[in-house]
Image (cartoon, rainbow, N blue to C red; front, side):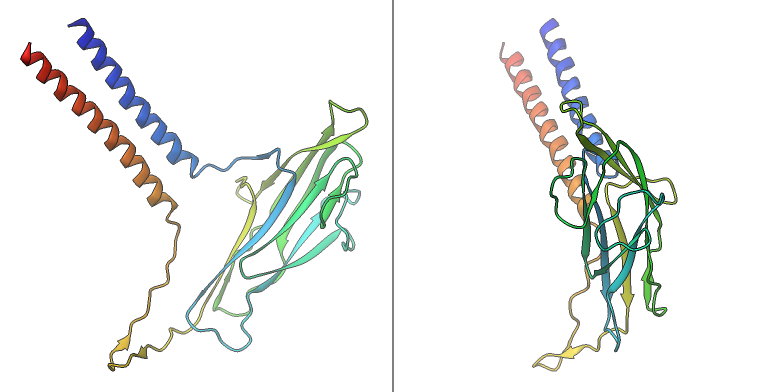
Length: 239
């Protein structure tokens, strides 16, 4: 009887562990964290096009990285404490950083003193017409540079933290843009039936996949426990 109660207790712990693990997996899909250990600053753009485009359509937009202090290092090509760059379609611009003066890929920020360096990232281009929807979030970027404890006189970039107007701290900066044109005219196939086409897939399916994996794990664990319980009951009856 004692062994049976112990087995039931272990079964309950196993189920609880699977449920806790599932909750952690689901929560982690929506959690944004500081980019500790990340020495690059990524500014990206996603551009969603719906319907047909008109003459003069563009999926390009200008953005700007500016120093909040005039003494802050800036990438090559910057002017007046500001660096302007263009993103087209689903594109990103990656700034690398260096605390030891070593060669890194451009555009790059080279730091010569420990400290916290603050920058601002914002879009410059406004929507050309009401068919465009542009995200206009302004981000504050803080780059933490410290002395290397393993090598005297050397500097390391500890982390980069991005913060938007609402106080959220995403792992990277991404601007969402879209264009909504006229609905395309259906084409007729050889049989004369209008081709309804394929609906544009929108949204993020990662949550659906996460729920499916979680359900599969829990279901598998329950099936194993039920099978074990059934086998134990059968053995007890045979005794």
